[in-house]
Image (cartoon, rainbow over all chains, first blue to last red; front, side, top):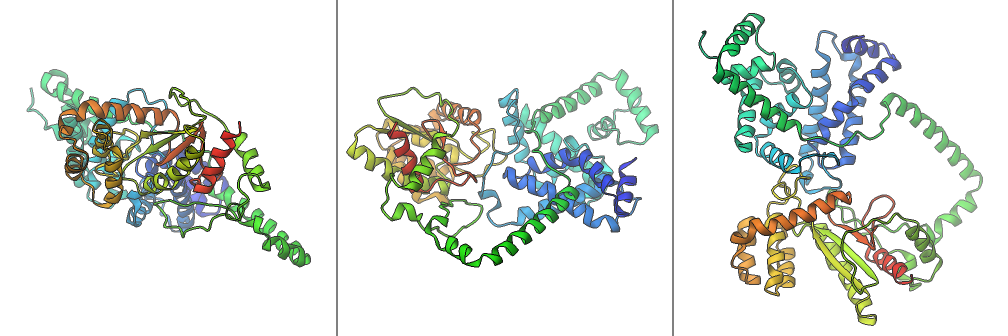
Length: 166
Length: 325
């Protein structure tokens, strides 16, 4: 079944469908928060909250809407709320996403430094493309910006990272 | 040959985001154009470099649907406990009034501004490290996992290793409350406890485990404190940094290093010294340091079961448990 069909089944109350969607996407949503939220436990909570919100909103879901942009739209809204929390950047309780098996720390350090230097929306667009592999249309829908903005910001972000790495 | 596509268009083509007809044209062009091939290759290299940022595996999570049914079970279990409790009110009330119900916690969390917790009853009552609570603490402490710190042992009986960010308020609190405990022990038993600090600045410029420049002057502060050891003004500089944490910038730290610690060559030596900071950071990563401060006592993580920092009293009890060995 496609994601959209599963979402339609969720709307009818199918727990199997929601479990299937969770199975398909929880790693990706986890990665979304893990690369953006300092607190590991909070990233886990936000991942769960995304799926809770997804299920709650299932009755309002329209099948013609691409599922992935719908899902990451929810995640992005939760992220925006999270960023508004006072002291958000002042509270590390866990390591941010970095695999213990990271092969080349120097490269990662430069990459993250380059990404950290980007404008917030440029960074969000870049990460949604590179890690969540969303299409330009899906990114535009998730972030509620025009598709041309996605393309121009993605280009700008990639050029900035490229320049930094050189 | 058709005219060159723009780099922006090449990027969209590589991302399969251009219309089919135009994609065919671009593909034909790139196949015969070295400059455009190079531009596409450069884009691919950039993406590959970004992909090097791998994250840890997701924790075991259950679908919210299953969690909800889990919660329903918890709800009924809780209801059953309440009913049983009502049937034995007297016993429950007695238990609730007992001082041993107090759960010691020491919140320095800078995410949440938790209210100050009272000292645990078993410590403030003067029971020292010999009461039943201390025995319970010792049992828990001695059962914990020990890790190798990679720091050569000295004459001390207890080695305390603190992973610190000098711009972190929790580090200040721990530093200022734990060290008097160590001093008190060393006064009666000289050299029994040695404290070693290791840098774990929360700033991407000198710590690849951090996504942003969380504490803007943390790297300069780490370097400055190391250089202040040479001028024997380390403690003065640390005190100054702690007192001015909220307003620190790299420039302010450089100036303070000069004014407070007599370090005049911070910029010249920064690159060399920051390499040592990175070595500490790497050690911290290997030891799975997840926040600052992180304190190890003879290789045992000094945190409560729910990952809160030890109170000074718990820290003292852990030291006492190690000194008994």
